[in-house]
Image 1 (tube, helix red, strand yellow):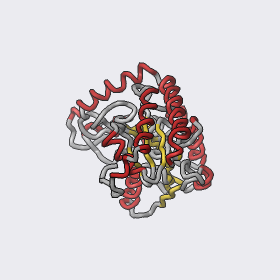
Image 2 (cartoon, helix red, strand yellow):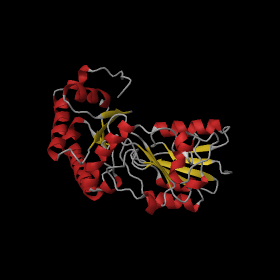
Image 3 (cartoon, one colour):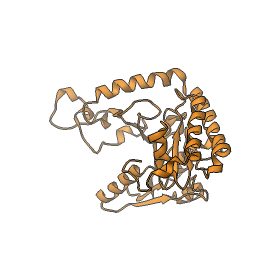
Image 4 (cartoon, one colour):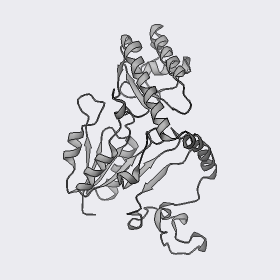
Length: 308
């Protein structure tokens, strides 16, 4: 409780950073938030800077396992070990890795993890998020929101709160049953395929996408915004172009290709190994080529819509 340093990076999803800023304010602005910058290529975090920032005053290290823009994947075990050597806790955001990259939280001795299920876990709109808390520390912590389902005996309807043992204490209210049912159906094909097979196909697909970027799209001014080394990459890549926003609009509105745009110049392409084929990867890149060849993007304004 006396440690005042929180370490994150500029690659973390902004919502995570906003939450940290809110917590800092609610605790009287007594904590210091350190944001680690990029390495020279603006694709990977500066790992040396991250390591040197960890000290005995570090309370928490919180990072996205797979970076939302470039797809860079952290070495979870190594970073967790380094943080623990300094006495810090570690929280991983798994939103862009769960369901596409093997994750072993217990083996890595991670303290906390959060994530969503509407991406690679196929939960769809309104799918629930999740929280992981290491068993070693579950009963040492309390939820910031005390709710009925976090009570030790919720159906005794006691008037005074007594936290349940284990992870149940982090529940709050009644679970969204319809969302959980769709989540169950979404998880089934993932469990049937297995993470090793999913990861193997993910690597092959993103390798193919990197090849197409360098050999088909480069002549139109595209550059790769993701690591070339597949071991450092999740299941999405970014391709960069100075007219990225307008190209993204043309792909969505005219070509039935649904990427998303991430400022300042990233078009993000996700590859869900369970149901996307290599033929579809080729077709998608060929439609990007067509947009460039026919200059379809030029009709769209540079002014951005609210959702990109």
